[in-house]
Each structure stands twice: as structure tokens, then as C-alpha cells.
Image (cartoon, rainbow, N blue to C red; front, side, top):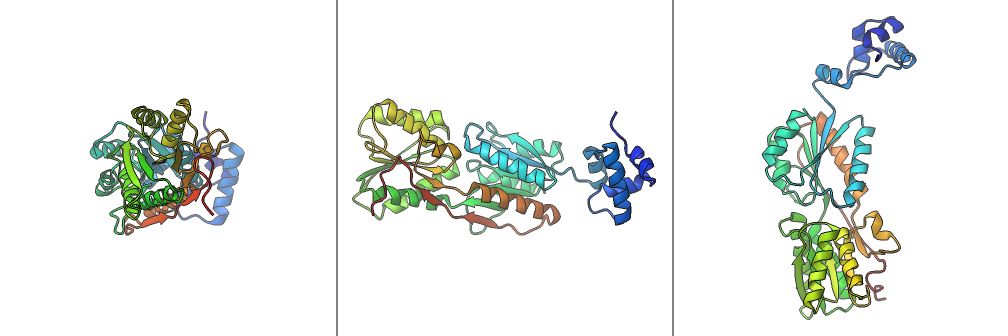
Length: 334
């Protein structure tokens, strides 16, 4: 049977309320009392009951971690960093899959059933309305990998996706390609729209470079492969592609190789994210590095701050990206 609070109190020679205060954040208890209670708890192997504690404090320490793209391997890294980071702060992540969800209201109702203290929307494809729905329901929320804004309505932590589109276009133009293309994720995703916008804006400065575009059904390997196969079968593919995500790029790369073509000799590719497998020797993907660790750390910092200050004014924390040159684009000209 689990050790009870009463048994700890008896071992320490104190009242049960003293034991309860010792294990309640912010409760008043002397250092002498705390030392006695913690010593007795260690000797008995006692662990505080989180559910009972939440009834006392009104806080569950549950943080809803909401996402909608579990097919993209980059989110294994994201979830690993978020869950460990939240747990290190004494919080408990509750992972929620919204892959098929279209109604923000349903998401709010679901998370409220678990009495979460806050929500992190970890997605570059869910529309801003999802994070806003939590804010309007009075739930502290941070939108990680959300759309950059100079006047955000909720806390946003991520990158400037428009600028990444410009960066990719500059890299392709620098290789003297006269036909470049954007191969994006779903056309209705805000990240796709912004990356495409930046790509087009930069190429307007290079009227001699021909541009084309297409969109995959999802940010997934299969979707990237299928879209590149379609483009190759239609003939006259572009010389260089900005695939708006690493996993799309890897799918496109497999299609190029299956058609007997070489990358970058026949077709060049640049991706975005710099996920771990992008650096594997058999992939060796040139890509734009997204500082995921910093984004996650900053998101957790904001969430912790909001738990103490729910009315904290929304801010946007936008991190710079950088190009990682590998083997799917020719070396940058000197």
C-alpha cells in the first residue's frame, strides 16, 4: 500500500497539515519543519499525491501540449524537448493530437476536461484561431512555431517564415539556376503561405529567373515523394527546389534518385528545419536551420511566467535562421 500523509506525520512527529504545507508550493513552513518532514518522507518512501495536491491548490500543473502533425519526424525532437523541459520545471505535459481537428472550440472543451493550467500549441500549420480560442477561454497559451507578428494577440515563439522563403530563393539564385521552384506543404497552412510569399518576393528581384510552384498534400515524406514524382513525370522539372520542410525534401530526394537522376547534379534541393536525419550521410540535405531548442526553451519560459501572471502582455519571440550547406546543392560560389 502507498505510504500515507498520516504515516509521514507520525514519523516526523508533526501534524498532517504540516506535512501538507511542506509539499504545497508557496505554503508557509519553517526550514526546521520542512527538514523533519522531508527526512521522514524519504525514510518511508513517500511521494505526494498530485491529484490531492491539485484539490488543495487549485492547480493541476498539467500543461496541454497540442500538435497536429505526428507524421513529421521533426516533432519527435520537439516533443522530447518540451516534455523534458516542462517536467524539469515541475509541470506535467499532456500530449494532445489534433491531426483531424478543425474546430478550435472542440479543442478547448477537451483540454478543459483535464483542468490544464496552460496550453502550448506546438504547430506551424494550425491557424492562429486555435491559440486565440484558448486565450478567449481564459487559459494561458503560447503558440510555438506560430506565425510571426509585430502585434501578436497571444504569445508567439518561432521564426520568420517569410524570411526563410527569401533565404532559400537567394541560395538557389546564387547557384546560377535559371528555373527554380517552390515545393511546399499544404497550401492552407500558414507556414506554407509565408514561406511561399518570401520565396516569390525575393525572386521578383531576379526577373531573368523562371519560377514555378506546387504544393504537397501534407508535411510528410510520402507527400513530398508523390509530388516530386508527379513533377518529374510531367517533364521539365526546375533546376533547383525549395522544399518547404526537411521531410518533404527527403521524400522529393527519394523520387529524384528513383528516376535515375542525381542530386545536386541534375536537380538541387534546399529544405527547412535541419532535423537530425537531414545530416545523415545517405541524405546529406542542404537546409535552413530552425533553432528548435531555443524556441522550445523560450516557450516554456513564457508558459511558466504566465502561470504566475496570466494577464502578461502578449509578445512575439522570433529567432533567426541560418543555412546549413550539405550535399543537395552545389557548393556556394566563392
